[in-house]
Image (cartoon, rainbow, N blue to C red; front, side, top):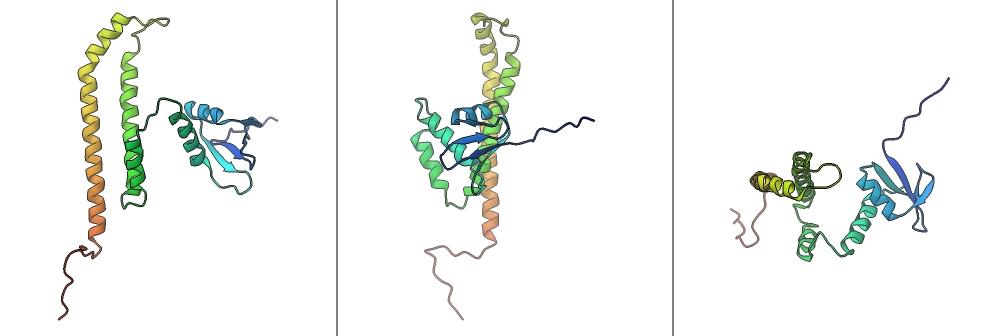
Length: 185
């Protein structure tokens, strides 16, 4: 009688005190580059400290981003990173993560639509520059419309989050810092 074993939904990677990463699925040590490839391949994984079992996944992902950012073509400007840092400890910190996540997903959706529409432009081996140019000229108005819609949705989402925060904080009896204290009768 044969039994089938189901592959775990999440790949487990253990991080040892010597800073080495061990992939329990392949029973091998891996590098940050290998973990980056797992991300690119959209593999579900979790990195745990081998001793304490603390979840280190975010820390490892941040290390990969740091390596990519120092690689010559950074995605984040110093101004943007400074603005993100300013949100830590701010009342809107929890909402900012959701806001950024939804915006990145909207950007990915736009990218996928463009990719789907561009299928058939190339003949398998080489991209025909003339056909590509015609395609891009036709796509410009559509892309502008999608980006305008994306920016509008992003703005509306942020305003909605602000309104939620205001309504949440309006239930508390806060007093403005420079307003006179009410006189007791």
